[in-house]
Length: 184
Image (cartoon, rainbow, N blue to C red; front, side, top):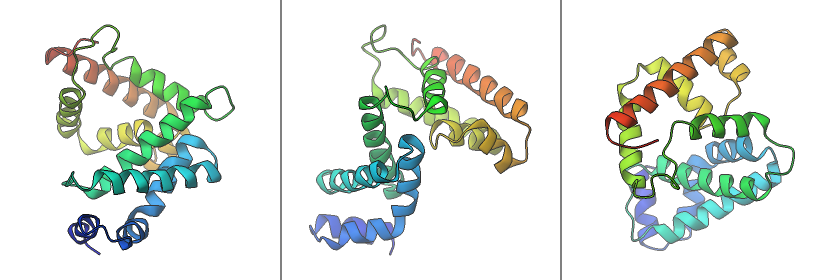
């Protein structure tokens, strides 16, 4: 089913909207949640919570990209759950990813006036300007939370090459944001 038809089901308040969303994007949502949480049970709960979040958001929202909308909600719920359990085992790789990215994003305590939408627009512009390979590596690490080893295998690179690419891209992002007046 096409995204527009699924969105229409949400506007009609049809329960089949959730089933169609799950059919189309459930596997991807579970994969994102599982990478963050490392627990199939927790991932499944987050995905179900994400569907409730989508149900509550549409209407009034009418997302232009349903896939990105559903994945963003899933990711945010999963990250929230992870923060609550941070003292537990999962994620040396995830914690490192979040710390690395946090080093180039605005700190709300330093820059409380930084608007999330302005930052998101700037990051989207930055990502749009990257070559497809650098963008894919960056997204696999910081959106899907793949390990450096997984990224290297996926793209046929050495691990040092992946680490170097990520470092250079983070530095470019930091400079890009600063040039747009977003204080780090």
